[in-house]
Image (cartoon, rainbow, N blue to C red):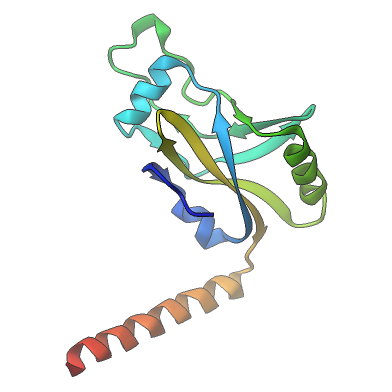
Length: 152
């Protein structure tokens, strides 16, 4: 899935800790002060995850800092945010998550027009040796790139 629009935040830890099998786009139900805080870039996706509850999808652990001029209209920064997807997509994800080792993780938050969207990844956890392999591959690619750059 290609993201079209201004990226607000990315969850880089998710790509380090999980293999991303599939990516889905979901709308997110927010209040006005939360959107203003997002426009200022005050959001953290680091330890967030998604969960299906009674046929609805929620993002948990996502921290949106309170808007400075929001006073009484500010909401709890860690409240569960409802994600907006079609019912059949949610049911498909529920079936996939119930399988062993799969989880739903927010990958990025972005604006699509005036709307806030979230890229949700269907992920499978990496083992320690998988993380070592990806780090070794990244280092090898870096040295190759450096050698190619110095060659010319």
